Length: 116
Image (tube, rainbow, N blue to C red; front, side, top):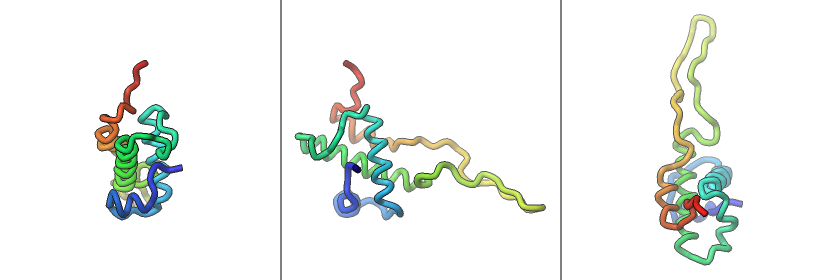
């Protein structure tokens, strides 16, 4: 289950229009969960409105970031050839998997703490 709804993304966060929003919400929620060391569980169970809000903002930012960086598919066409025709280009550089804003939103929550 995603940490945000399509309504939250579109009307509260006011994110850029993306295709496959429901899928990207799930992927972004998974990434936020990984970044926090699986401490979140369900946002509805978090008693602090501030922490829940930061998780939602981080998830929405990650949705936008995934879409802006090629969606859920990795890379792009780097080269192709057919007979004498050849093409090179596309996305061959490694891009960060996680939006830098995710860390910024989650930092004041304590969810990034890895100590004991």
